[in-house]
Length: 621
Ligand code: ARG
Image 1 (cartoon, protein in one colour):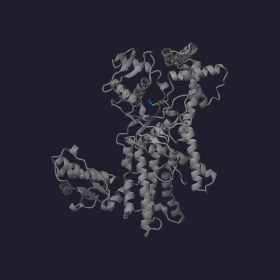
Image 2 (cartoon, helix red, strand yellow):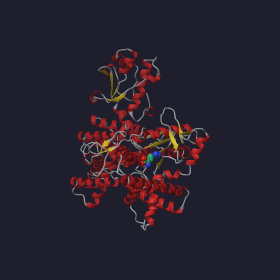
Image 3 (cartoon, protein in one colour):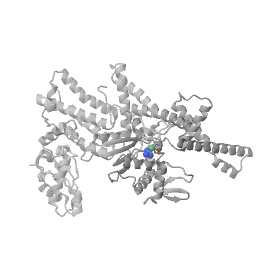
């Protein structure tokens, strides 16, 4: 008889192993890699907890009758110690095999899971994982797009941390290059005109940034058009003047970049001012979002400035980069567009910095995995950069391993009109405004639902509810998909929302307060034998047992939405259990204790699961 040690916490995994063995011995000619067990939760819980759907595809492959294949599997099957004996009667329909777990096996698995780690085992080989997240740009406000790179990135990082890996967060701030030099130049100009910069806000800085951009933009196309269709000579002259001005501004910006590069004190001081203002606001917003992105994580483009020429020299010396029409490019197999690493004018690009970043992350920080939580629109960029880095060997760790590079891409946040979310005047929506509004709205809802709470208690609850709503709405959709932003939907207390999950958690916990008030001795709940008899109890137990496996799958595939779906399902299973199985009014003391233990375990899994994706929780609401 198999011992507890040979059984995984998740019964589906144990069943998978047993069915694999049965299929192998029933069909010895079948190659091992062709065996698929297709274990799934039973669609009709009355018939069993799980079903094995392997017979149908297997019959097709072997040209046999699926019911006969199912019977052959059953004949070779040993599920002793896990499930009730399965006889020919367990084969249903076209060849489903129904499986009911043994009550003992179920409670034994759940007991084993009920540890501090909640059944999550430390990895045999903990990895170093770099998570590239947030990625704001200097002199710009964080907008709604950064919600995704910050919230998804932080969730991916937390999932890896929870799985026991070493995580290094990297905020690849856009803080270098010509656009930044433009604003630095502008800042120095206004300062020279007597503007005191000590109280400069990010909004003002952003206005200066836009002005600088506009001043440097030459309207050459307009001039060409006028020349073609024939315009007023005065208009033409004016346009020519404006182009000359723009060229001059651009030249000033370029000179400023050179000065900045060479460490000129005035330039560096102005740059630092831009940096401090932007990052101060950025990190404050991250903190409000309960996203673990701090100054320690900052590794902006500027931090690679002294490595870029070395990267280029190295690529040229080793023949990895080649000249192409004056530019320097790395050609990679399978991609039509080469990765440009140096422009014709000698300037470096976004891709150059990212190559240096991969070299540092794998080569110096020892990352075995690098996960980029960045907008899907950059997918070609990452394909090029990953391939170029691989060609150059920059993805090698000091141990000689090849780091895995993932672009965990995400879609757009849309407005109700299905277009990228914008303000009424067509501007990007500021992330901090969005947070303010979510909190304001949550405060109203919390006050309506819970008029007894006084103001001091209500404020932190409203804040947590708002942040949970905002983050959960973002995390619960399939990353790559666009989603429509709706305050009403995300803040609802019912349905697949953040507030619903917080409420579910509060409910699981409040039962303990009631039990304590009723004078129950709660010290022994943790050791109470688990009696899993009612269907709703079994269903809840099965949902709980999926946690460790689900955590691993959600984390390693960078899919926080799977954790959301799981937690929502768990909350539903708990709700059915709570409706159907009296806890404090259960028939026997043993049942009371067992059910309380189930409540406690559910609360801990909900809390842990929400923490792995960075959703704040509350004690009451
Ligand atoms: N600053 C970039 C942007 O706004 C995002 C940075 C993403 N990370 C990276 N390693 N390229 O588009």
